Length: 627
Image (cartoon, rainbow, N blue to C red; front, side, top):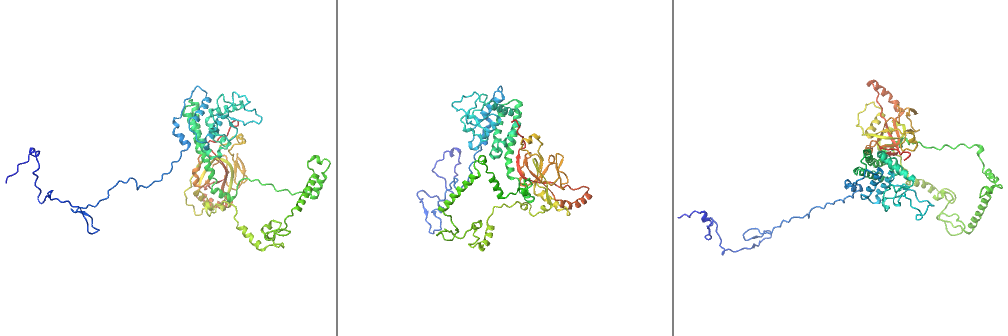
């Protein structure tokens, strides 16, 4: 047996077929001529899978297709909230600036800045009232002048000679609180030196401009406090929100554009901006306070102890003297005696003429009665034919006839008289139930242990808000009044209020919104007003000083967010004190505690509110007399 030559690289590259290599052991190759193709074998049973003749499965399989979001859940996206006008302004506010000549007067630069601020942005529609607020602010600063309305005997416009210092009609505003919107005018040019009114109006404009330039901080305090209330803007919630935002944009524009680069102007304007940002927070919050106060506790205390307001009671009528009693006949006699020769001269219609007129009227009524006889009788249910024209049923001439409680023989109707009272009682009424403490405190002995003390009417400043206290364990022999006070301290928050700063007597006389402390006549406690006792009572033992002492008003813990430190609240403040009987009963227990511990336990003081009068911002300032 000869061995095949070894396969070399040269011989491997020179391989040619045929000859083909030998097949492996156990494998039989079918020649092409002997190959017979076979199709899919048809199964005999329905459960069998079709397979080709070679035994391989040839069932068509499903193709995997990529799902293009067919089964994805549809998410409902809420429509985008439209942006508010100040949000639209904020987007490009940093690039809104202009250059101003420092050689010009501050008044000229301020007037030009007002024009550029108005023309350099897109203003919302008139229904938002932003342009109206802008006109009010310009009038306050002196950038826009008010002119009086047309005079009845004024010279016609076509015959009038235009003055050199006349204000353009499109830039004039009527003298009233309802300032028209700026878009109602064709031209919005600001007032300059050539656009001044009369000498008096010009002086007022210059005074307003100088007031702002001399002290912008005080000017903004007056604008957002006393001026805001004087013009009635404080009673409009949209104005309370819109005005501080608009003024804030204007002041920031003055700072950003360096309209007043001088330090004596720039620093005060920055402080005025701080006041404006504070007004942006406190003015809308005053509406929240007004809606929430007085709360349920204050209303319940008022329903328990009654209103502490001073009410005017008319004096009782005096007993008439015997000489002042005049008989009707005597009065008629006096009238007859007054018919003298000068009677017709003194009065256009004398008693004689009046009697003649009455007689004529009686004749007319009698004649009309003959032509149209009145209906006689006539209730529902009787005959309508005949001479008397009677209606349905019986009737009477008094009010009770409307209920048909009287029969034809003037005897009471027993059926209707018995049914009507029950029917009337069942009718719904509009009576409002008085507020009580039951929904707030539940069953409590507060009406038995406590009563009202000092009643003060004043404006006070919010100092802080103390949350409800954590409950603590009381002594076994603790009086019921102490348990009630502990329950109040754990249920309610405590708003600490301090007296408002004392103003001058002249300021109070000119009608300041700040209410000076006044102790009402319904007060039962001891109060020292200007170091003089104005009321005496048994409780509290320590006198209350409205000008110095702080008070703690109980409020619902849910309302603590509406109180901002520094804001002022004007209302009637009523103190809750222990009743004299409770104080006397707990004196022995207090004495024993004092002997054991060496000190007497202090009784907490709580107050509640009645009739909230106003809410003042923390920077409130009265308008000067000459402003």
